[in-house]
Image 1 (cartoon, rainbow, N blue to C red):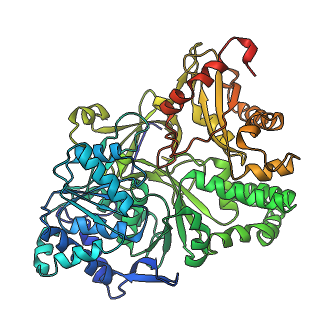
Image 2 (image 1 turned 90 degrees about the vertical axis):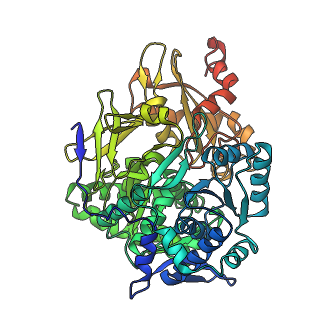
Length: 604
């Protein structure tokens, strides 16, 4: 199939906007809890729709009294926390446009986003973030930025006080200025290549797509459902889910520090979670390593094989009796422990930001957690397509959401159009024109549609490697398999215009000590020492041999190097959404790549 579209299921009035979602929930007799946050004693306290609405209006009044005008852009630079969403909605209630900034951004990155968007103010989490913003403003003479408000301390209280005398009618008028076609936010792409581009997402993108998401996922997102947000709210995926939850009346909690994720999952007990594939890999690998360290590795691997086999059989329509009995046994021995670690109530997980892989998808489904893999970009307000509990094919990213369409171009590129698609790049009509073809957005990804309209992602167009022999290689097909092993943190396949394919591998520092102990190596062995050790090299070679079985001889990895330092966001090699910055890796590790392709003497 080359093209598949799904008609919209919900008709939204053109004069409505995101603020109406909060007002609607506050008007319900049930007054649902939209958010939950920890009090001083560490107990989760629900924040009802009426309470949230009242505080949002107070902050919008404060912004108005401070001189922020309708249509002004206002930045948000903070970790994922309740106040992030609070000020996001306050910006919309003031008739303004929010501009997210990753809290890890450097002064130069902050300066670019504030300057390019023409922001007049910014909300920041802490004094440290305020220093970064003020440094950016000073360095680039960003005279338009008049206000910086801190979420910590008394910053928000001062803003509430500033607008205390303003009539409610002022905010009611301002929040009604925007319609579905008007700008809601400018989200800057995290920039795996070049300067970040500002994606113009409208109120309609969020409102109509949330309505479609609610209609397509009623079992997941509904009043009474609970989720805990730990992905960056500056990223479109978490941001969309946050708006979706307000649409449905579901409750959102936040974990600013992933180190607290497990205890927060266990105390909050969400019914669904959202994560990127790397999180699911970590959950699987940590469960496996814990079992192996406790001498129960064989039981875990048998349980994992059973979960995968059960899921495949269940998806095919019939689970054999013996397999069903084994599945029930392992549920008592293994599976329920993994579910309990996630709070014990999680039934669904929404995965995006990259391919999950069939094996992990079947594993989690087999242990009682259905991972609904979806696909989208910043340019598409997150989901173009998603699997749903009633329509799921593990290994695909689902069919288009209602109101969206997908088309496969002649060269395999995925094109899309519909309610999810941005109106363009801010101040870049040239890029906008380049990105759209006959009304379709070019995603830059390559994939295929099956006969039922389910989409499968096979790679990224710009990342296709063409060897010196002219062979096209899709790196992700190899990288995902190798990175799935607990010992490996990152894998980057190289070989563009080279005689053969090779790979750069980094080790997982958390998994390494246990691996060393199980293989009779000193626990104090450093990552750099382990990278050179013959047992580690042999293990990596084994993983590569296994991955090579899935590709042709010309696409197979012929050489590798284990590099002594990991690719991280802090090192500049990962985006905040955990995507590899290939150009940066190739630049920083050019000597190692050159050494791989040096004359035969130095090759593995």
